[in-house]
Image (tube, rainbow, N blue to C red; front, side, top):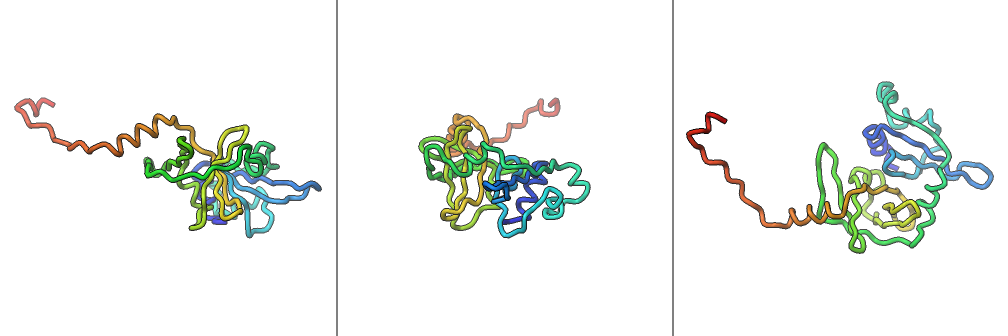
Amino acid sequence: MKVKKIGALCRASGACLLYNELGEAGEIRQQWISDGGALWPVTGLPSLREANLSTLFDFTPQQTEKIYIKEQELPGHLYEVLYNARDGEDELQESPMRITANGRTLMALTVGGGVKWLKAEELKPCWTAQTRLVRRRTEKGDVIAALDGLFLSGIIFPLLLPEAYYREMLRLGTSAPTPVVPPEETEDADEL
């Protein structure tokens, strides 16, 4: 678990959610942390509590006041996302298309003629050289699962961008570049 990277994402999103996955006897079986756009398993740490999160992620008191921090039981719809892919999993391929603006990078992944967009930063806490990305279909929609072998190292909820947007960006990126020609100076240039 890459604690600093998860903390930075929670700080940037303004949300830090601790989900407790309970066993049959009500014991905590697994914990998950979310920034609202992705979900990562808590590994290699003792059981966490809401009060521990600010310390774990080195949030200052001022940052803690601005971040929504909450601990709760893992909602039922997230069980499906984590464990019950409805129609199996489809391998995702990274597209050469990336869009960077305001310090954020959007990454396009393709699968079966479709496109899924995600914030590339949300892969940092779960990415290793062996990580592969798959699409899982659920009743609530598709999610992107990061897998290291059979181990689930993260779930990223894709951004909802129209596929036409991807196609247009891809077309613009592969079309012949148009040279930029400065306007000719005229006698009226001083009037502009």
